[in-house]
Structure formats: C-alpha cells, structure tokens
Image (cartoon, rainbow, N blue to C red):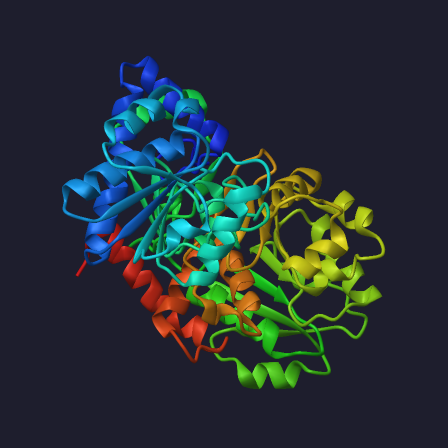
Length: 497
C-alpha cells in the first residue's frame, strides 16, 4: 500500500500543525520576520496581480495575521497605492514580529471600525488567521458585518476572519472573501464547505518554510491528487487480458433499474475486465436488453446469491444502488460480506440497516468501502463533529474505508488517514451520479487496487469526468466520459499527446 505520508506536497495542515511548521522553520534558522515579510509580500503581489490600482483598506488584527497585513500595506504603498491601515486594539499591545512590522509602517494607523471602509475600493482582511477559536465580537464583528454588506472586494490573509481553519465551519459572522492567500500548505478549512466557498479563489504560496519540517509533523490529511495513488493505478499492460483485469459483480434490485446499470457501466469503463449485473428474474429481460458489454445474470426468486457468488473469479462486489430498503436487501448484504470479497456498499445497502446499525458494523471487514451521502451516513453512524471528524470516526468504528460524499467528499481510512476531494463541479449534484461513483470504485477494486487508493482515485476521476461534460450533465453522461478523464489523467502524468 502506498505510504500517504510521502510525498507531502498535497498534505493539509491544521492551524496547530501550521504553527508547529512555523516554529520548526525558526529552529532551523529561518527568522520569523523573514516568514512574515514573505507572507505579506505574497498578499501584496496577489492584490497587484488581480486588482487595478485604487484605495485599499487593510484591516489588521492583534497577532501575526495583522503583522502580515502591515507588510502588505507597506509594499502596496511603495507600489503607489493609497493605503489606509485600521488596527484592532492598540499599537503598543502588539508583540514580536507583528510589532516589528507595525513599526516599519510609516503611515497612519486608525482604530478599527465600520467607518474605515468608507472610500475603499478594496479591503485586505488581516484580522484573524486560521487558529481563531471563538466568534467575532465587538468592533471586529461590526466591521465584518459592514464589510459583507458593502459588496467591496476582499483579499483575506490565511483564511477569512471568523472561519475555523481546521473544519471550514463558521464560528459566527465570517468575511466573504473574493481571494484568500494562504501559506506553505492548505488547511482542511480551505477545502471543506462552507469554508471553500467563503475563501473565494485560493492561492497557497511558499514563504520559506522548508518541506523537511513536515517529517516531524507527519500529517495524515491530504487534498486528493493523482500523486497520492498514481503509482498503484492499474493501467492496462500489454500482458493484460480480461481475466487478469478482474470480474466485477453488481447486485441489482427490481426497482430503480437505472442505478445498477450506471454502476455496471462505470465499472466497465474504468477498466474491469468483466462486469456482471445480477438482477432479479422478474426484471432480468429489461436489464439484459439494456446492456451489451455487461453480462446480466438472473437471480432466483428467493434472492439468494449462492449461484452468482459461486464463481470465485468475481473478485469485487457492489450492492446498494436501486435495491430498496427491505429485509431481502439486508440479507443479501450480509451474505456478500460473509464472503470477504472486496465490497462496495452504497445507498440502500446502508439505509436498510437504519434500525440495526450494529448488525452491519459487526459484519464489515477491511476489504469494504462504504459510500454514504449525509442522509445515509446519519442512518448508520452516531458520529458527531465536523465532516472530517465524522468520516474519520466512522471509518474507525467500521474498520472500512468511508467515502462521505458531497462537493467536499472526504475519504477516510480506519487508521486515521483522510483525503479531501476538491475537483467535483456543482453539476455532479444530480440523481445517479453516486451510482456511477460506486461503480468506479468497484471497477478499480476488481483490478486489484487497495480500498483506500481505489476510493481516492475513483472520486477524483468522477470529478474529472464531470468537468469534461460541464453544464447540462446527467448521470448517463458520466460513464461515457471516463475515457476522456483517463486520457486527461495520462496526459498530466505521462505528458502523452
């Protein structure tokens, strides 16, 4: 299995871990003033690149975020911009590097308040960084409320003030930024909703912290990217044949017949050598007529799976899409899990255990991937907290890989590793898209990918395929766009024409 603690290029750091990285860099000889100077310079450069010259108000807080703001103010003024600096608190209360940078600012410093926004064409929010642990209050709250109502463009430093950088959750009123400039590595709150939307466009820039400091921090959360799983992706080889590429089995129901078809086609498109849809006998003719490259096998009236599972070459199984919530579905899920094959549980395969979640959890094994949306998740898991916390806890409780779906899908491993996906466009919010995702995971499992890597790769390809379609997407489009997504991936990885 790939070691997800290497490389660190795509790791996400909590605010506490980012503080550790700062301190580790300082211990290695990088001066704190140098880090702050680089951070403020990055903010100033982002402003110069994006906006036309005009009056800018810089809102500075009492900590290092405010110090970054003082640097940006100084550099923008040197570039000819009219700059007003507003400070929360007293200059004499500033400490450390922030105090040094404030002294380097030669212009006026006014007290923070809504009035400082008058006449501004742009606002830099350097009030509070990602480590804020309480809601905005007092004059800071009044100013941010006025800012959000003003419609002025905003560049936020690190995170928009009022946002929890670890969870992406508002602590109360939050600055709505058009651009957020962060440093060294992104934070989970930059990707998790609603934080991602509140950040606007995100730039994460290097400021001189050496990558080597991450070895001691050992981050376990990452942004989904091919670098995390491309070295184990099952690209076809000259020696490949249909049997070597796995046999995926989809167990379907007798209602919502399109769902298992979508999953079956996705498994085939992503490279499974053989795909079989096991269908109740009363709808077998419909499914058989609708599918060509996917084989369709009739289930007995009892719904028992002994016959379809007899072929041990069927090495990966999916159940759930279009199944319906019933005692039969529950019995079929438990029968599949008893076989200990690589298994994807989606939709009704999870919801059917709402009244008996412990029965499901006791039957799961390490070869399982669970793919709930928020509603299905709540029916099975009692976990509380932010999305990242809930996904991690559910993976730990179940001993399975957990894919908590959404625009900010979280893939969690029982050992605590987690990946947040950020490439899914809004058009994926359509019926049947989740069935395609389940089929993609199934197809990769059939080809021998480990559960965590298969889930991460499938979620990424799902988003990439949707990007190829754009507005107007319906679920039927997604399997047909998997080849284009794979071509795009190969071009990015191998520079193929």
